Length: 153
Image (cartoon, rainbow, N blue to C red):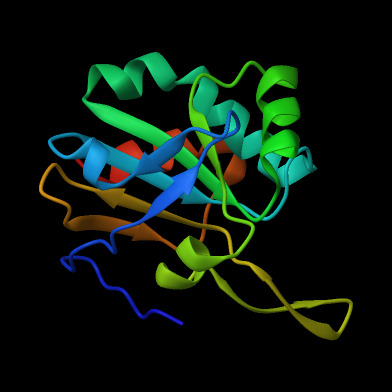
């Protein structure tokens, strides 16, 4: 599992979005990227987070940000989630968990006293040169955009 820190160069990745189209970090060179990892499509916390980013999307893109969500769900699941909530950004289907592991967003979790492996909710803000500006390990799903913008002031 990666132990990334602010100031590190973000791991390069290539994945496929909800349409089966390839997306890579290299293709976003020169843009600031909000790369957010979430456990599961269409669950309460993940929906709150995605909808908060959706509701502030114009403001974020106006500040030069590209928003990309990543989970281990399939392209088909992502497409349904994107359509249901009118999400204006792409969702990467990381079914082999390579991107999740590269960013340390896959690991041990505990629910009801039982330990298991799963997606850790994290967000990385990456600058135009591919450097990690900010890492969020404790995401406020209902106010995530505000959390990001406040931290970058």
